[in-house]
Length: 163
Image 1 (cartoon, rainbow, N blue to C red):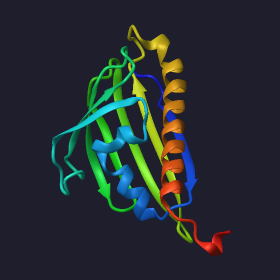
Image 2 (image 1 turned 90 degrees about the horizontal axis):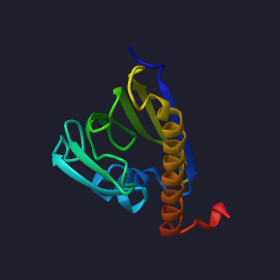
Image 3 (image 1 turned 60 degrees about the vertical axis):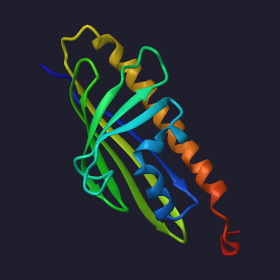
Image 4 (image 1 turned 135 degrees about the vertical axis):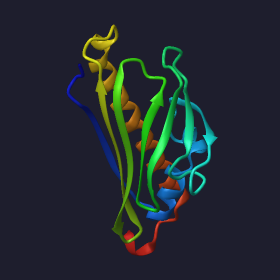
């Protein structure tokens, strides 16, 4: 038996071109440069292209109580979107779908959306922790997209016509 889907949705507008945003979010091994809680990402299997469909990555986290997880890229549509699923490493997980979506807003601006759907086992020892985990995880994603926004906006020179 499974719980109803737990949805995490975060987004931000970034004053940088979509290509710059895509280059950062699709470079799996450099995720720790903008998601502080991620200690290390290792590509276990290359996809097509390298970070695309079929790629499997191992994600290690800084908090001691967070387990390392393995994820597979299941959809890769440069420079717009990729999707991934957790293969192993999260106790009580029934299904998972993560999406990073890069939307072109024009004039060198981008909206970045990070969307994750979790379904957990309803009868699992950790079930009482799921609500606090989801809340904490949403905070982690918000921090990550905020950090990426600050980094890219610092790296990208502002155009005079944007003020």
